[in-house]
Length: 337
Image (tube, rainbow, N blue to C red; front, side):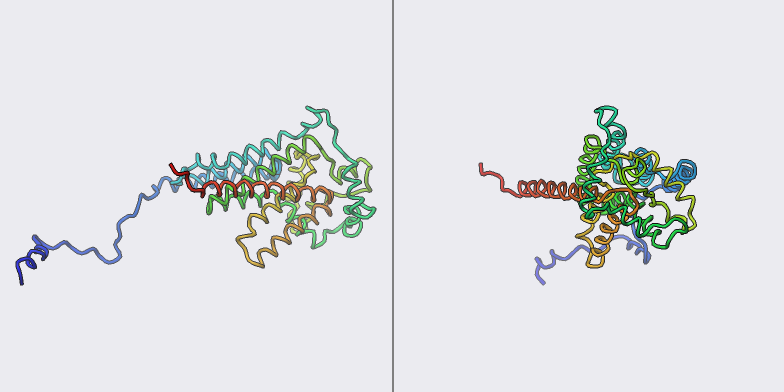
């Protein structure tokens, strides 16, 4: 062995050997959440759920935008307690656009007549539906065919569940995107806010009477607002009372465009790339089923739904073009200097 080879050898160990780590022992990879923080989060969730149940029992299911804003924001803040990614402040920042557009919607209640002196329109949408229904308003035809006073039919349960899903499904989808894919969250929220903003402006400039209200004024044959009836089939009559209590505070002339139809179509657009054939069939059924439910229950004319879908198509195409242009600019090579 040469002297050079001898110099390359590592020096012999000095001192006693270090004890080997016992099997299964690991070093902490990062800071752990303090125990008191976990307890505080659990307590906050419990208080939130208790307050929500108490509200439902005394005030009704929150259907107007003010209540939705309060409960949505409070729930997200509670869930973010102890989060290492910004906590409640990040929740409030990311969801602020949703809160603001819901406040804008709430401000439309009575704004058309109080601020602009515009009375709610009754005839245009009614005449349009008579044309679409070949001489008869589709709601009148459907209720004459399917609605019968007395015992609730089995099919009224999915009707009720489909109708009520409008009040939480769009926000659940947003929350899932926010938790799992922030880029898709912002894509969805940009379109949601744009759709809601355009709809709010339309509610002010063109307040429109829905079929059930037109029937009460004698413009249509008698109609029944049947959306909550399915609760009684589930022995949940209290839920029916709570939904009806919540409906009393809604903007009753915010009918064109139908945001029930619009939000449902937007949810389908957002989830479409993530699901297979069965999922897409479910989404398509959900969109068409919501349209059927809205007409059957006298909540909307068919023309309201078609306009709602048109608004969705507009905002989706608009943002697709804006986002494509942004991506194109981001990939352009920098000019040579």
